[in-house]
Structure formats: C-alpha cells, structure tokens
Length: 351
Image (tube, rainbow, N blue to C red):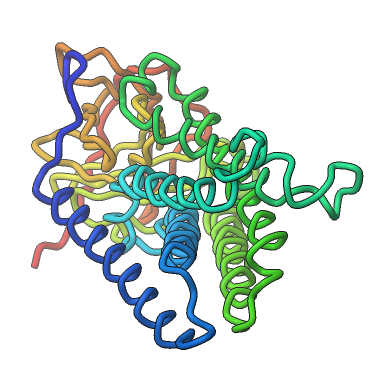
C-alpha cells in the first residue's frame, strides 16, 4: 500500500514472472519462424516479414487466450493465483506483441498505395454492404484500440481516479476485443490457411475460454448455495479452513464473503472484494494480524474491516457463529468498518 501515487514497481516475484514470460515469447517467435521457414522452402518460401507477422499474430492470440483463462482457472484452483496476481503484466505484453503485428501488417499491405494507410485498413479487402464481406482488418484495428486503452489504464493511478467499478467495467472490454480478434482471424488468416492448424487454434481458444468460464460459473453457483429463507449461511466445518487463510462463500444474494481462520482459533468474515481494485480477499491471507489482499497488498483489520492508519479503506463485515463444528455467517452485511466480536474456536486440537 502507499499513501500516495508511485511509479510501477517490480518485486522479485514479478521480475521472475516477467523474465519467464518474455523468454517464452521470444522462444515461441523464434521457433515459429524456424519451423515455418523449414515448411515453406524453395519456391514456396515466404517473405521474412510475412513469417514474422504470422508469428506475432499467433503469439498475441495465444497470450490473449491465456489472459482470459487465468481468472476462471484461479477460481477453480489456487495454484493459478500467481498468474492472476501478475495478469496486468501479461495484458500489457499482449498489446505490445499485437502492436508489432499491426505495424508490420500496415507497412506491408497498406503503405505502398495512394490511399492513407489507416483509411486503407478500414476500406480495403471487402465491402460494408454485406456483413459477410466486411473488411476483416477493421476488426483487428478496433481490437487493437481496445487493447491500447486497457494497457494505458492498467496502472493503479487510473483505478484510483476512475473508481474500482468503472475501472473494472472498462477492463471487461477485453472480452469484446477477443471476439473482434476471432472475427479478424476468421475473415482473414483462416481463409488462406493451408495447414489446418489455424482452425484448431481458433476453435481450441473459443472452447477453452468458454468452457473454463462456464465451469467456474457452475462451481460458484453450486458450491455454497443455501436457501435464502434463512438469515444464516452454513459455511461448513471450520476445520476445512486453513490457518491464516480463508474460504469464499456465496451468500445467495450476489454477494461473496471471505471467511478467515487465523491465529489458529479465531474466525472472522468480511466482504470478498478489496476496495482497491475489487481484488479477491478470500484468496489472500492473514499476515501480522491483518487481512492482506493478494493483488496489491492492501490490508484490513479482521475485527472491523478497516485499513490501518493512515489509510482509510473500509469493507463490510459479517457476524459469525459456530454450532458444533460448523461455521455460520449472517447473510446481511454490517456497514463498512463495523467492529464486531471475533469468534473464538474453543475445541481446536493441536498437532
């Protein structure tokens, strides 16, 4: 956390993440060019610029597919959380690779005529008279503009000044961008593909992204659902909650709650969304007596949901009770920053 604005910083984990990511990007592009050069030799040899364009385009498409899979994958398995914490780095890198592809494409296909290259992107190769003949380049150009907007607003400065709800809504545009890129591929590169690999890539991407989101949605709706006729939600046995960690439960009213167990014998429940960027507090931990958001390290006190001074963020808190070995959370949230008693588990067996 910071009391003021600061430049982007990279800790050791983020440096390792970025290094691995860019090594993988460069390795993919080099391997793609080598394999393509071997496959199209002699009279069928392709221009190095065309090969590079194809390498960059497929790389960006794969990166965007991975980007859209991280969220639901992390909800299904916590092993993917490190990818979730660094997702914005992947998003900015995806835009850079897509921009390089666009630069080469505009230079190679639209810079040697009498029409302005940007105008040519939106008018060449088809007609707007019919839906099936709309120039596919336009889909890619619009998607690139969206990716630029998301990359440019990825810093915390924009989240703070736009507000978390608006910032999150803005970054949901990544899904329309992905759809536009799929249309861009279907109307362009797929028409000239003679390997049969590109249809597999596109269909696989659509199936993977759609499938993960559907499975995650069903898991969320079915895991913790209880009847709305009761004021209390059964969160299950307290022993299922790891010490200094949480489980996330669905309250049945579009609200998610993070139920923490900490100091071995204490329980508390708070809203799952961090006030910074709606980060999933339930995926975080309790460290030094504070709930720590896994995204950017924002902290909250378990007893009242308030950030330690001089910070002023507050989240909703919930009443908790224990009956037998089950934990129950009251459905109705208390106002943000409301202090309530910390529930103490009395029959913890050590060892």
